[in-house]
Image 1 (cartoon, chains in turn red, green):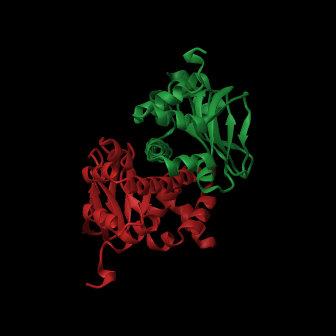
Image 2 (cartoon, helix red, strand yellow):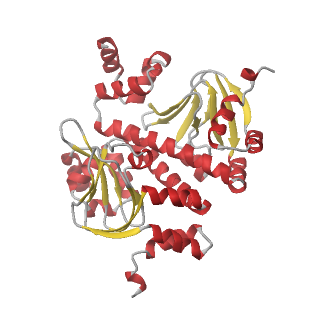
Image 3 (cartoon, rainbow over the protein chains, first blue to last red):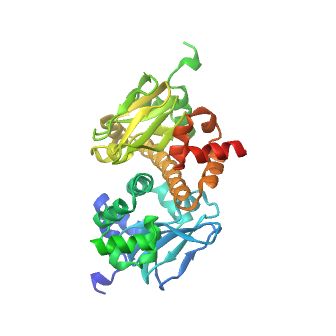
Amino acid sequence: MQLSNDPYRLFKQFLSLHLEADDQITEFCKKFKHKKTKKNELLLSVDEVCSYLYFVNSGCLRIYLLDNNGNESTRFLVTENKFGTSFPSFKLQEPSLASIQSLEPADLLYISYKDFNVLLHEYPAWERIYRIILEKEYIESIKRIESLITMDAKQRYQALMETSPSFIQRFPSRMIADYLGISQETLSRLKSKR
Amino acid sequence: MQLSNDPYRLFKQFLSLHLEADDQITEFCKKFKHKKTKKNELLLSVDEVCSYLYFVNSGCLRIYLLDNNGNESTRFLVTENKFGTSFPSFKLQEPSLASIQSLEPADLLYISYKDFNVLLHEYPAWERIYRIILEKEYIESIKRIESLITMDAKQRYQALMETSPSFIQRFPSRMIADYLGISQETLSRLKSKR
């Protein structure tokens, strides 16, 4: 098997940034299972309890909400080399407000809530890695709040062009507009101006 | 000295929920200093690097942003028994986008970035406590994003009445409207309807 076909390659790379002992990398990989998803496959529906934390090898997970009128709103887009889940539901084991969809065909690793907690209680190194993931995700969520409360449509579009320029080409306009909290008309206007 | 006058009482209570050894509580308290602030005192200005993590004994810290037009937007309100800082700036030691203001006269504990990292590297128990704080704050930030992207003014007001009913009486209408991302007129209308 070629190294590039190893579904744990990216995950091991991530772990090796924060770990010294190779044996721990092996232990952590054992708890993560591998799966492939189809485009638009639903991994979690609203009101289900979220049982898994995902690591994205390729593809994109969309974590989204439905409002009272049945409109979808994208909370997060989770792309390669990142972790994602419906975090409040996963952590508190409560029904999820959000759904998780595989926006593109995806190659994923995933760990169950139970195995996640086994790692957390048995390996201080996993506690540290989890803390580092939390810090990054928390900072991203703060930036998302900042963009929602202080930026107008143009500024949000510019910020996305700076942080994730590939999103604009990669995802449907409807999804980008929804992620930015702006109308599709405004998004087309901003794209054409550029 | 009466127990109730001990500025470390709430902090020790919080720590004792997650720690078994009393000697660690003492070590952690040693790294936190105590201070009182005046109403509206500025603890961090935009573009400064945030050097401290705060624990609120009493009062309220407001973490807010300025938009290009000089308008203030409240990102978080941090009340009793909670931790607060301009997290991206504190963690990454970068200039802060947000400012921190003591909205009311406050009684605070605070730890420097340097001492925070000493605890983090020397005490696995502090790593765990910090991880628990991060989980709570991350969940709060996700709920804040959800309210901003899916709720209308009435729903945001109702959600605040459920999670933090005291805020409505405690803080100026201008601040509440700003925190909810709605106009003061809409807020008065919602308040009078109730």
